[in-house]
Amino acid sequence: MNSQQARQRVAETFPRAFDKVKFFEFTRNLLNKFDESKAQAWNATYIKDAFKQHVARFERLGTYWAVF
Image (tube, rainbow, N blue to C red; front, side):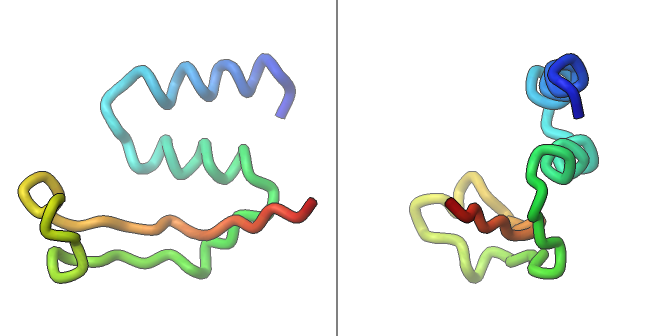
């Protein structure tokens, strides 16, 4: 992805309401070693009490390990 494509992707993804498909696409293109095999979703049981009023469920789309 060149720099113009990256700018366009950011402009398509972040200024708008959250869209899981667009965010997932953005993440896949941004991170070279994105591991989708670790995707998982959790329900309200695992949400901390401080957030339960605002969050019904949450998801992990995958994991990323940066090696320096």
